[in-house]
Image (tube, rainbow over all chains, first blue to last red; front, top):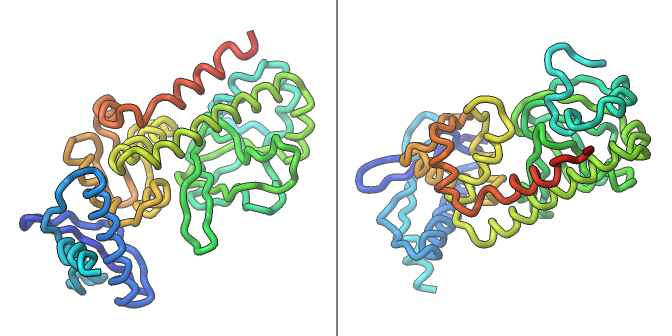
Length: 81
Length: 238
């Protein structure tokens, strides 16, 4: 199990995840990140707000960037289906 | 046994109980400290003790078959747990555990049942159950209609009501369970409330900075169950 931190970047500013979450592997962390972005984008749309060009930058326990999930890309993927 | 550190009257129910009724059961109480994570009851398992918290926050948690959890309700020095104890069934209907460390006076289940045969004690705990059901019904409505930031404000205010001072030892994981959202959403939501100056959010600790403004932000998501509790518990033994 490894801990990953789900930080949020918008307009060059980052809100840090101070707690993180543990996952079996990076794929599990990525799936969780995508699901989290889906939930956050859906909540914004539901309340009538625009979804900003935001990114979830997921880093590992050493602070290195593991991967990034784009809010717009996630929504785009749902438009295709 | 009554501890000199935290009198039983720190629990609102025990404070309301008429003196002679309290004296009758005083020797049935055992003072216990409850670290975060202590299990007070497990679903389907026999109830061993009934707890009257004097500090800390406990929660009732519902677990889905797939393992996802959601907060059903919270209690502190305003009540007792497990609430199933008054139903004359031996086993708990919920998982209940401590989310913020505290302490309590607890009595054995059979002592609680014996006390339930007395008029004032039973009136008190039944009133408390009704107040708790109002909390639960508002949680159900709030989950359906309010946005996540209002719901977070609501839960923070409810936790603040149940601790002394302005610091609440909450993990983001617990907040996610309280709100039935994924944990990264908690990061954003806390950041928004922090941006408004209502709270300070650090790892494992939320500090309430502006209670009045947080209440105003929560609007109708907070307040009704609290008013109902005051109404139900007022002049109980007049």
